[in-house]
Image (cartoon, rainbow, N blue to C red; front, top):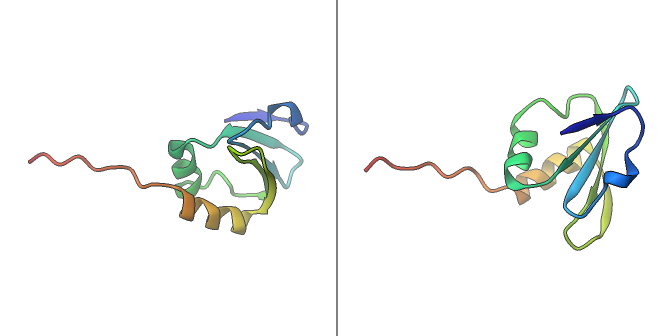
Length: 85
């Protein structure tokens, strides 16, 4: 994740998001599965007001934190656990 003090519009490429925090700070990241799992299972989104996403298709959507969490749950694959058998 990369942090910014102003909205990094130039970074909003396909399959990425900009997290807009309540304190006028911003964070950009690509939405690979590992990153989605991190956002879903950590407290990184604490204080987020909205999340702007540009999908692979190029479509743009602005989520509330709760709606983005729902999207993450539906669009993230759990890590595979390797068996020692």
